[in-house]
Length: 292
View 1 (tube, rainbow, N blue to C red):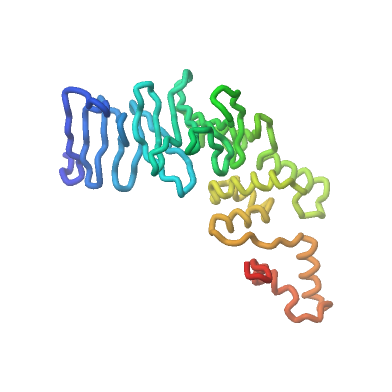
View 2: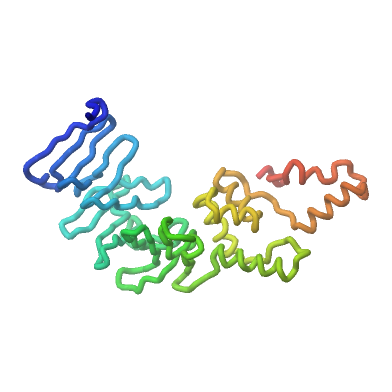
């Protein structure tokens, strides 16, 4: 028997709500949820509208929340007669628009205050396609009539669902429609270097863009297996990402050779400075002479 203290109150109607399209409203202790024929559904606002959680559902399908900067507060305002979902900013401007495409996937587009395509603040994409199985594809399309290109800077442009075996390894990184080396390829490059030069522990030289991709996966989920691989293989990029998460200045880095030389000098007493090696015990100084 259900507990009346936890069971939500039901409000069922014989017809669909004129703007929301729902025919059942459930009242919870911290808000409401709206349903259509047993499926979460609301066309003029959030289907789950509770104090701790607000979600958009259409026909029993969860629509992922758009990802924007913290200073842009978006509100879902509903579905138009043409079937477009709109999210507006605090000034009432449409910043995100989504619709169901021919493959039954939701295409979500980002716009600036002028109504022009706006690249995502971190990923650089302007269009995300959300598939039912959890796969996401990220594109850059400067204008509606332009050809979209797979493009993402802060993660894989073809991101497979977490239910896929080895999803991180199988997801593909692309920029401007071209394949680029993601973290997995960089790990392989490191293993090849270790095999060819077993006495050299330093990671291979990587470009700034490759380093940015490593930091991106750590920032996205610092406890994921791939982030821990970054910590073990490319420790500099991992520590920079953690500092970014914590809002700290980027750390100063020393090469493996420099650290080994400092430790050797400290152990053999070849350096007259009694504090030799202390910087590697207490951690490098994160500030410069100006205090930054």
